Amino acid sequence: MNNFSLIVPESVTFKQAIDLSQSLLSRLEAREIAEAEMARVISELVKTENGARGFFVTYLTSETSLADNPPNSLVEALRSHPEYVAELLVKNIAMSSAQAVYHRRNHADDMAQDSERVQQRTAQLIKLVNLPAVYDYAHQLLHSASTGEGTYKDFLERWGYDHEQRQAMSKALQHALAEA
View 1 (cartoon, rainbow, N blue to C red):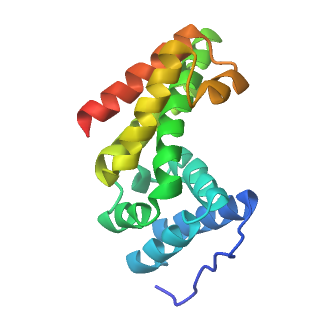
View 2 (view 1 turned 30 degrees about the vertical axis):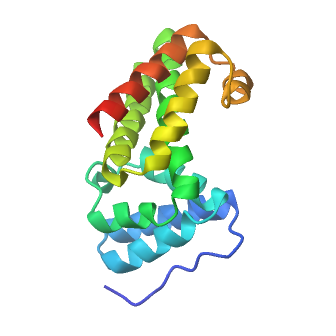
């Protein structure tokens, strides 16, 4: 391993967070970075909304086996900033569930499987991080998905999720919460 350090800018952009996360995952896969350094970088990324969004979009969709078997240091890094991590985990499981429905309707089975993989990885992280805020956000999203009202009404309307997609979200969230 080398001593090269990944620097996370204080006001990291979404694009920078994606690039840093891709670099981090590549270095981890090549065993060019220590687990402690990985945890530091992830913790710095997820302390901002842009950083957390960029990390999750990269991590959850990556081809690396690390995303299927997250080490404890990664889970601890995510726990270090629940203010962004908790809500993004809930939104990621909801959005990936809805996308799987969309892709299946359009006979894009490969893309549907990718969305289902993101859903499964997110459910696993929800279980591992075990953050109380995840349950709060999940219950709020479940309420909005079933009633069309509440905290996540605008979120659901902005993305145009229909009844079947909202049902898929609810089912995935309920399953993730039951497993956690």
